[in-house]
Amino acid sequence: MPQLTGGEAIVQSLIQQGVDTLFGLPGVQNDWLYNALYDQRDKIRVIHTRHEQGVGYMALGYALARGDVGVCSVVPGPGFLNASAALATAYGLNAPVLYLIGQIPTAKIGQGQGVLHEIPDQLGIMRTLTKWSARITRPADAPRLVAEAFQQLHSGRPRPVGLEAPMDVLAKREEVDITPLALPAASPQVDPDLLEQAAKLLGQAQQPMIFVGGGALGVSTEVRALAEALQAPVVSYRTGNGVMDGRHYLSLFLPAAHAYWEKADVVLAIGSYLRNPIQDWGVDDKLKIIRLDVDPASHAIIRQPDIALTARAEAAMPQLLERVAYYNHVRPSRKEELTAIRTHWAEQTAYLEEQLGYLKVIRDELGEEGIFVDELTQVGFASRITYPTYHPRTFISTGYQGTLGYGFPTALGVKVAKPEVPVIAVTGDGGFMFAVQELATAVQQRIGLVTLLFNNNQYGNVQQMQRELYSNRVIASDLHNPDFVRMAESYGAQAFRVKTLDALRHAIRAGFATDLPTLIEIPVGDLPSVDRFRRLARVR
Figure 1 (cartoon, rainbow, N blue to C red):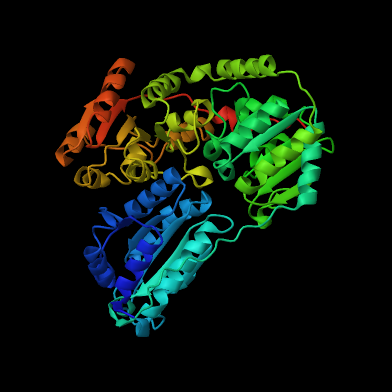
Figure 2 (tube, one colour):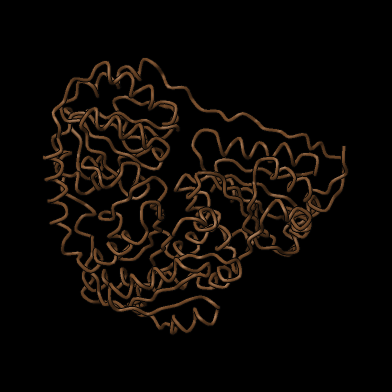
C-alpha cells in the first residue's frame, strides 16, 4: 500500500467519489490538505473565496443547481463558524454538502489551552448542523470515512455532512489502502399496502390537490403525469417551484391555491411539510392527507397525515402513478376552472406592478433553461409567488432559513455548477454587502453571473415593518452605500446602472455576453409588499 499523508488520502478519496470541484480557503491547519490539492489540481478545481461564508454558500449553490454533492473546506474555529450560516441554510434546504473542517493538533483538542483557532467542542457544534459528522484520526481511516460521508449524503434525507481532520493527521504519513470504496446508499422501501391505500384515495377523490416541495425535484415528469390524470392542481412555493412547469394550467403558486383548499378532499404532499396550509388554512375531518417523504421522522412534525408513505419520491412515484390508474376514472378537464384561478391570482398580484415588470424581463432573458436565484428583497419575495419557473432546479431559494445575504455567493456556486446556463441573481443593497468581497472571486475565477441589485439605501423589508407595524419607529435600517458601479468596475467586473426596463434588458444581454461577473444596479424607492399573502384566513 502507498505511503500517503492524511491530506493526500482525503483528496484521493474525494476523487474516487467523483468530486471535481472544491470551494475553500486555506490556512495553517489545512496546509497539508492544500498541498495534496496542489498535486491533484488537474483533477480537482479549487475555487478559493475572500471569506468563509462565500465558501459555504458557493458549495450550497453548486449542490442545489446540480442536485449533487457540493464540497467545501475551511480552517477550524472562526473559519468554521464563519461558514456555519451557509451550513445551517444547507441543512434547512436538505442540500447535500460536505464540509471538510480543519482542527487543532489532536493532543490539544478539548484542553482549553488557547491554541490558534481552538473552540469548545467543534465536532459537537458541527453535529448539530449536519445529519452525520466524524473526525478522521489517522490517514488510513480517510478513505472509509470519506466513503461513509458520501453514503450518508446519498442515503435518506439529503442533508449536509461533516468531516473534521486535525492538522497533525493531515500531515502524518502512513500506509493507506486506496482501493476504490463505494458504500451503498440506503433508502426505505415504500410499504405496498399503504401505497395501495393512497392510490385508491387519490383515484376516487373528487377534488384532489398535489403539493410539491424540494423532495419532488427529481419526479417532475411523474408529478405532471399524475396531475393530468387526476386533473389536480400542483401547488408549489420556493423550493418546489419548477417541479410543475409554471406555464401549465394545473400549476398554482401557494397563495393562489387558498380558495381551492377549502373544497379539496384528498391532498398529496410530495417532499413538503404542508406547513402553511395545515397551520394557517385549517384541516377538518373531510380532508384526507397523504405525505410522501424519505424521512419517516418528518411525517408527524406538524400533523400526522392519514397515510404516511416513507420512500424516495423517485422510487415511489412510478408505482403510485401505476396504481392510481387502476382506481382512477375519466375526468373532465379542469383547464377552464384552473385558468380562472390563475387569472384571478394575476389580478390579485397586479399591484406588484414594479416587481412584476422586473421579473418579466428576467423571465424573458433567461429563456427556457436559465436559473433564477432569489434573495430577501421585495423582488425576491414577489418572485416566489409570481415568477413562472419552467424546470426543476431553476429557481433557487433560501427556504425557511431566510438567510439575508445568501443570494449573491450562492448564485456564484450555481454558475460554477452550470457554466453553460444563464444565471441571474436578485439582491438588495443590504444583502449584497454581506458578501460583496466575492466580486473579487468572481472576476478571478471568471464566473459570469449577472446580479441585479435593487438599491433603496435601506434594509427595506425591516424599515417597511418599522413604519407600518411600529408607528414609524425607524431605527438601524437606513444605509450608506458606495457607488456600486464604480466599486464593481474597480474589481474588474462589468457594471451598469439602469432606470428603465429596456435598459435593464440590454444590460442583462451584455452580462450574458461575457464570462466576467456583471452587476446591474437598479435604483428603487419603496416597493409594494407581498405580506398580505403570508397568512391567509382559515377556510376549514
